[in-house]
Each structure stands twice: as structure tokens, then as C-alpha cells.
Image 1 (cartoon, rainbow, N blue to C red):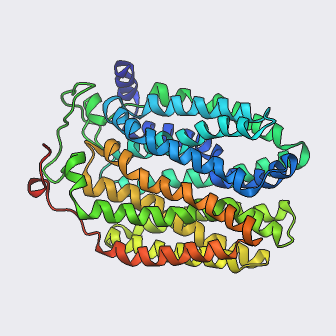
Image 2: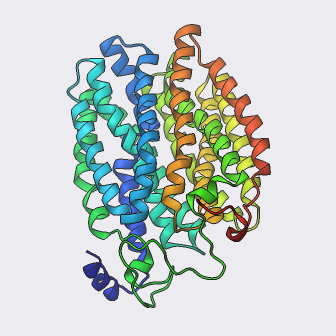
Image 3: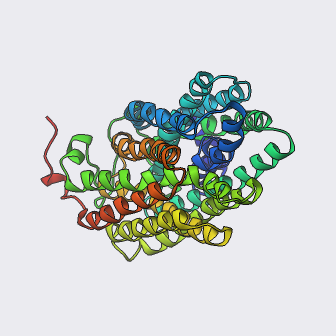
Length: 430
């Protein structure tokens, strides 16, 4: 399929990497936000009230989806390294579209789990890995900008979708909202990735960020020509570095907040007496504020060490979580959501950038397929912990404050995640 992509690239007045970027953007506007926690948050109240489910039972689907994502992500990472992101993203988008349509017809908890869990699993693993890895593979010097721009488009999609779904729920019902999500995803989220995405620029004869074509590498080649300043760690070598494990610990702690608070922030403010149509503004603020965090982090990454930036966004996430738990009005809720959203936006960008900068492009999918397990573990624990504590105490204040304390500690620890030793001095795989 690369032959016609090459013909297309010859007719374009710009680098083909921007086509890859545009394909990733279609994911950011379609399948990526559908199974996100912020979108699901607007369904918590109408669905639990409709069926009489507890918040813990409802949140458990997110956690189970995260567990499944942990299991499939290493395989997805290897597929991305070998075949490219296109086929993985197209397959994941198809699953999400079908599952969303199916949820609109459910009547029992097991049906909700049977449909939401697979959708959440491919969202959390393959979909997250595919888009960011594709952009990281096609950009080197402009990588911070490209990843930040991708994150901005994702934030826009994530900000708009909860509001749109809330409007559909108010105007019709939650079943129509889920059905709309499914049709929308299948309509625009599948074909662009499948048809346009190539694995790496070297597969089409390009050097990264150059329109000059040289010798094409094999589609399934396990090596790529890299410049003298670029090094690529194998999975085994990455596992022997201290930074790998510190980043994993930090990811776990912060993503407990990312999923646990963002899912329950709308129910929290409804519990404070705000109507759902008003409380949903906190979810949209959380989503759109991620744009500011990504732009700030991408700009500062040129001058500030990545580990220092990770510490800063971690401290901001802790502040946002604690602030949300203590907020009882829309005004303070918006402020807390903005702080938390900015932190999470910066976190997404910085983690993707750090792994690419620390460990290189060649095995990036496989390495991130493993490291994303810590991120997903946090996302598994966060929603069910917050939901269960609410069922027990009748308040979200305790879980949000506990989450903040854990992230505060991990943010200090991440300062020791210095760049790994050069590949030549790292242990070799056996």
C-alpha cells in the first residue's frame, strides 16, 4: 500500500508527515474521545438512575477495561513497530464504533460490561499508542510541537463531545447519545488511518522531516537508518534503566487522578446541588484546559529538563484534585478543573515526549506498550476507588484528597528520572 502513498507524497508540496498528523487528528475528533472518562462522566447519573446501579458498579467497567488494555497493549506495541499504526488505529476505531452502538440497546449490567470493556480496552491501549507513536516516528526536531498540536485537537474533541452528549441526553435520552457516538465513529474514524498512515518515513524513502527521498527500507525491517545523535534502546535495555521505573511509578500515581477525578467530577457537583447541564461545564473545562497545558509544556521543553516539567505538572495535578474535592460551587469547580486539566494535558505530552527522547524511535511502540501498563493501572484503580469511597462515605472529598497526597510524593520522586545512559553502556539483551 506504500506505493500509492509514495505517489501521493510526490504530488504534495509538503512533508508527508503532516498527512500522518492529519490522520491522527481524525482519531482525536472521532474514536479517541468516545470512550474517554470525561465523555462517560455525563452518562453516570442518567444510566445509574435508569437501572438503579451503584457508582462503584458503573465505574468498574472502566477499571475492567483498563485491565484488559494492560494485557493487550504490549502486543499492540509490537504490531505498531512491525506494521505501523494505521491498521491498529482502524481496527480499534471499528471496535469502539460497534461497542458504542451496542450500549444504546443494553438492559443489564453484564451487557454494559460486555460492550464497554472492549471499547475502553482498545481506547486505553492501542488507540493511545497508535496515534502518538505515529507522530513521534515521523517527527524528531518538531516532535514537541507535533505532539502538542495533536493534544490540542484531542482536547477540542474531548471538550465538545461531553457537551454535545449532554444536549442529546436532555433532548432525547442517553440511548440516543450512545447510538450517535457509534455512528459518528464508524463514519470518520476508520478509513483515514487505514489508507493514509505509513509506519515510518524510512518506509517511504524519507528522512524524518525531509521531503528528500533516498533508499526505501523494507516494510518489515527491524532496523532504520538513524542520524548520529539519535539512539534507540531495545525493550530489554530500557528495562535496565532507572528512569523507566521512576516514570512508571509517576505515571501510575498521576493517572489515578486523571481517571478517578475526571469521571466523578460531574457527579460530585451534581451532588453539591448543581443541575447536570451546569455541572458538565467542569468536564468541558477540564478537557479544553488540557490545551493550555500541552502548549506550555511543548514550549518549555526546549529549555527545561523533561523531569522538572513532569514534577511541575504533577504538583499542579495534586492541587487540582484537592481543589475539586473541596469545591462546592461552580466557580471553584471551574478553577479546579482548569488547573487539573492543564496538568493532565501537560502530562500526556511530556510522557510521550520523554519516552521518545529517552529511548528513540525504533522500539518506541514496544516500549510504550509496556510502560502504558502503569498508566492504565492507575486508570483502573482511580474510578473504582473514588466510586467505592463515595458509596461508603457519601462524598468524593476523601478520595480526591488521598489521590492528591500520592501524586504530591511521586512528583518529588520523578525529579530523579535523569536521561538513561547511552545505548552503548546499557546492558545488552540476552
